[in-house]
Amino acid sequence: MGNKEQLLKDIGIVDFVLVDMGLYLDTHPFDRNAIEYFNHYSKIKNQMEKEFSMKYYPLRKDLAESGKEWRWGAAPLPWEGACV
Image 1 (cartoon, rainbow, N blue to C red):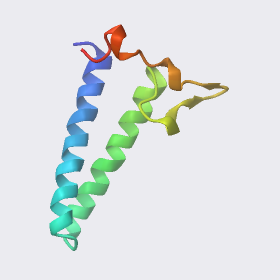
Image 2 (image 1 turned 180 degrees about the horizontal axis):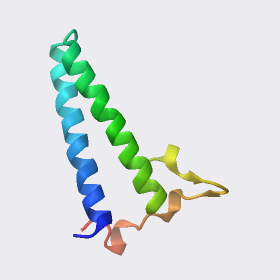
Image 3 (image 1 turned 45 degrees about the vertical axis):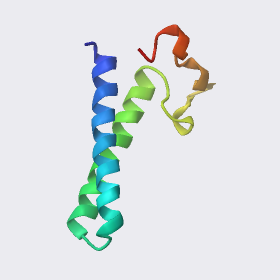
Image 4 (image 1 turned 180 degrees about the vertical axis):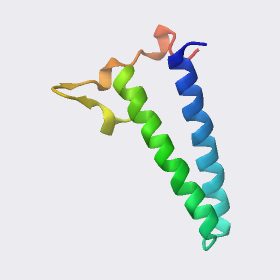
């Protein structure tokens, strides 16, 4: 597995943590430790997505601008084998 694939996998893992913590917080909205945990991993995920976007292609539209160019169309399309 290359660096790009590993970084995408790691982003997916952190995203799973955030979804799971979001569900927990829906039923425990005053759990300060869970809120801090969620915020901590949210910052980590944002940093990982920024790093990925700078090296490869943007994962979100708010990360598509890189200096002087709009890179939203730089990602490979599904039929180009990117989703396999």
